[in-house]
Length: 274
Image 1 (cartoon, helix red, strand yellow):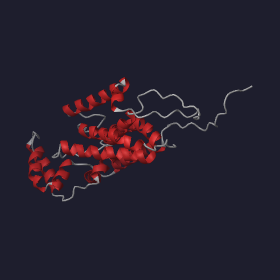
Image 2 (cartoon, helix red, strand yellow; image 1 turned 135 degrees about the horizontal axis):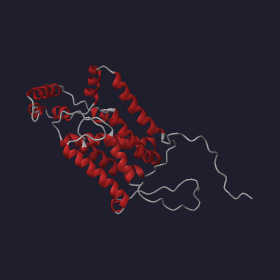
Image 3 (tube, one colour; image 1 turned 135 degrees about the vertical axis):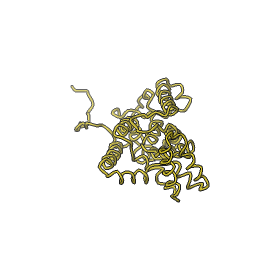
Image 4 (spheres, one colour; image 1 turned 180 degrees about the horizontal axis):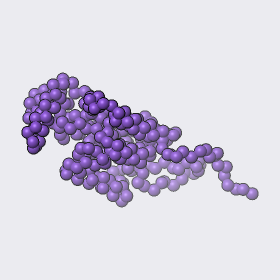
């Protein structure tokens, strides 16, 4: 007699077992980068100036009196006079724009500096976006990522308000998803509840901050992540194939957004189909 339970019909196993929303997110970022690689340089520069987040432009829009200081600061530390002049001309161009282009506080996440930068972010998005999307569904996954992107830009603006360096990349949003995932993935699964379907694993609870600090794997992972971001930020070195220094402050802002906003999204969350 066969005493084994009836198992559901096993369909075809996908090559990439990612939630659909994560796959679409990565695909959108890749398509945008492909399009940028075939655009003429002038048009790609226009895309960058209209979609990237540039702190000095927001500062000048919110405080027009800071325009002169932005232009002056642009020439500092350039080394060569021609580079200083070019930076100041660019600064004059930015401060002449009366609008902060508020959409750039979100759209910068759609752009990447190189294929290596994009691939690096795509890997992290697949790793940490997947558990968040499966636990909370498409809408809450998107809201968490968007909150991380926006808060990351605002923190970057606060830390470096006169910066002319365009900020690009989805890292702040991914940091939010990483922080969210860290609150429930670094723990053993809870015991099965009597009467629950045996095929479905029990849902792990969110860890509180004290519980997270007592979780060695979580503390180790988060410690390495924080130290890496701070070191590369202090040394002004590129990370993950980006062409410029890492925006460590945007990453930390995104992380904080995901970590503290996640409990607000926990109530009523349902696993997503993918």
